[in-house]
Image (tube, rainbow, N blue to C red):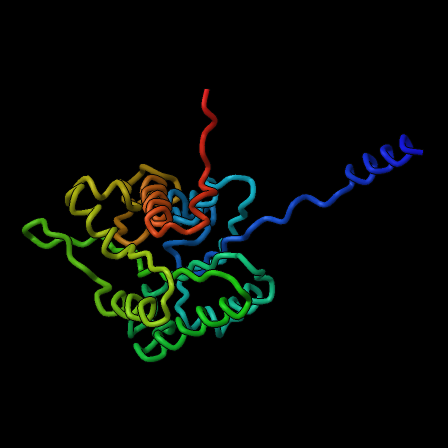
Length: 247
């Protein structure tokens, strides 16, 4: 009888469901999003980010090109995230690039931008998920003297203010990005962005000079910056950053 029970347990264990993974949701704009092949080597930092975690974590990058806090809501991109969110998940929220441009349809007033961020945070918390607010990642801009210039000053500060008011973790990719670009300087920092000479890449036969969107190298550097901030914040997610096996 004991032998039969043991065999039955082995049989059932073979069909047991795998342990549920913690999901990391990424919502934001083109600097974070998964890119179409026709835009390579342009790369969103969410693309390499997914490969830095162990097998217990699943990264779901829902960021979309051109979206703001407002259009991500109005186009119905947020609701599926909320519907599928589970307790213990993480929600990385990074907007601002498109919210702040008054000539774009995605423009969001400062007051509405704050209200939208609050909504993302509160609805995540209601599902017992962990929201993390991220300032819009810095663009590459230098003055004539070679000093890096901020381009998101107002909207980045709004993100910082909301994070402080609601007591949620903040990753300041505007300040951190500017510091990195300054360290590299006006010329070397171009390697982090989608800068191409005419004829260098078939997707951009006339070349490209883009100070907003990242190259593969730049996306990886920003992803590594986010990982470092997770460790600094001492979030439990940091414990699942992939560690190579010791020989």
